[in-house]
Image 1 (cartoon, one colour):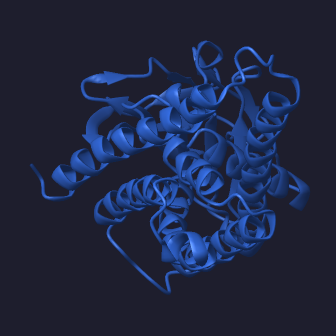
Image 2 (spheres, helix red, strand yellow):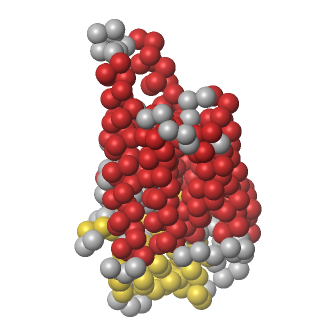
Length: 329
């Protein structure tokens, strides 16, 4: 457990975000390109779009920095259209991220494709089966939770706080139900909250659970430990807004938005279950097979203190960083 927490980079409060390419047809065989790549400070991923050979830019690309991403825009004319022709993301194979391609034709439904690092070339199909949408958004949901260090830290903190299996199952279920509610409500525009304050409160929720773990281990009474589902549900609502922010960045096909949302959420749950299973497996193997010489009360005490301290310090850092960002400081 200590290793799981210690290796979560303090500087990376969010998941490794995918690059995003939007291609919008504005006239027959004429397209507006929007290329968004993740950035940190002045550094950005060296990813470039290689258009089909018969596409010619009609003007110089324009670039700007917006919310931690570099956005480039340009217009190109593609003889014979762009459907069925290869679009490559240069240098994608050298990164840990994916790219999302969203194509919006003049007529017909938009199409969303996932371009993987091990296969950085995409071809926009004439028709896209629903299984492509389902698999794309399922993987995106799983990647979001598994590479989202703040969400994983919250789940890990719950595992350290709640040691009763039934209560733990109730807490995880409440967290799942809650973030599913706000994910759906935000995605369909029923609820709107600014992302910066939400991200700051998510960091606060992680720090709160870390403090509660220390209180419980010290023998103090804790409503959170006695009714963990209540705190999990409340904070799960906040984390759902975070998931919705990621989904909003990616975008969804308008004609199959419910399907994309469903499988993105299922992917989040699948990734969450994988993480929980991995942590519980590590705990079981330690208790079962650790040599008696190192499986001592002192080592056991450190085994929970170290990850709690890492979680507490990291979440405090995120809280300060995100609060300053929300205040524009």
